[in-house]
Structure formats: structure tokens, C-alpha cells
Length: 265
View 1 (cartoon, rainbow, N blue to C red):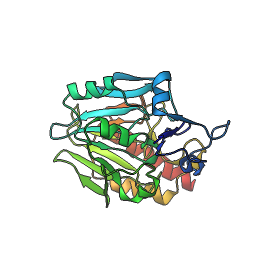
View 2: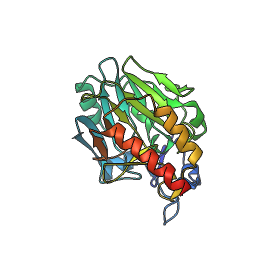
View 3: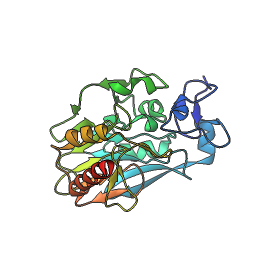
View 4: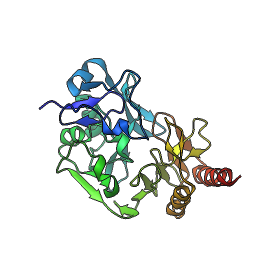
């Protein structure tokens, strides 16, 4: 069976559909040249995986950049080793690097734009579970028994690690709260809700970043309430170097206040 990958968003499909619903949604876009596809094997001939330290965690991303250009992170929390986010390409070198660091117990993904080749990754890592929020079930393009849906506003993985439904960007948008973190104060791993700004001093909240669609104020307030009880000093963003190291809680709080004030100004 041919597994096709959308070249704009990086999502893998179990066939070659005529269009990509992920890109036709208002939060994403169809490329200027129209819908184009590649395959995992073809991607291997044009791209490699970049494995580098990103503020203390092993980051994995495609080189050259592909689709949305997110990077995944290996999060060794002690009780559970997590692959946070997913990519369109899997390589033997990347799997070996993860195994040399204690392996991966589960995959957790922030939102549908980063589902990518999640089933391919699970299979390469021995069939580890993929944790997704139930509210985003409709966006799964390649079903698998490895996918486990969770419900509610939080899902505890260990005494130190909790998945929190931040919502806003997608109904099931998720952040990972790591109480211990690598440094004192803990860490928050986020995708697009919230998204770390380029200046690495603020975060932003939008329904669509490429299409500049604002997030409703009600969703920002709901996100603020869900994150209110989380202590963290570091915030890891969706791609290389987009991290706030130190002062992350204050930066997120200030960003909430800025956006909410701007909405009523």
C-alpha cells in the first residue's frame, strides 16, 4: 500500500487522496502550486534527520526544512521517556539515537498539524502508544491500534508529567507540563497553543498562524485558566531554538494579559 505524505503540512495518508483536508482547513493552506504529494521512501532520498541538542533536550528535525518544519524532542523524565511531537520522516539513525538514550515509552503530540508520520514512528520504536486528545480524533488520517485517545483537560503520565488540554488552536491542542524539567522550576512543552514568539520573550495565541486568524478571547481565557496551576520556568516551542529558558511562567502570564488587553482596547 502506498503511503502518501502531503508536501505542505507533512501529514501521512494510507493512500493518495485527491486533496488534503488538513491543508484545506482554514488553519492551514494549500501550497501555491496546488496539492502535491511525496512518499516516505522518496523523502529519504531528499532529506535527512537533524539530531542536535536544543536547550538540553535531544531535538530531531528534517534537513533541509520540510512542510511546517517542527522538531520533535526526546523527553527523558525518569519515570517515562517521551517523544514529544512527530515528523514526516523516520530513519534508522534517529531510532538508534533514541534507543541509546533510554528509548521511547510513548509518543505525545500537541495538535493535528504535527501528527505527520506518527504511525511510522510508533512502528519503528516497537509499537509504542501514541497519545492524542479525543477532541481531535477526526483529524487522524492513518488509523492504528497504537493510537490512544485521552479525554478531559488533563492526563497524568507520572508524578512529574501531565498532558494538559490547552485548546484554542484545535479543541484538543495539548501542552506537556514537566514538573521537574531539566532546570529548577519545571518546563512547559508547547506546540501552537501557546506558540513561542521569535524574540523568545513572549508567546502568542492564534487560531491560524499562516493565515493570521485571531484566537477568540474566550478561548484565550480558557487556556489561561487551564494553565493557571502549572509552575514552570522554561517553555519549549515548536521548532529549533524557539524556547524561553528561565522566566517562562512570567512571560506566558504577561502574554495572556497583553493579548486580552489588546482584544478590548
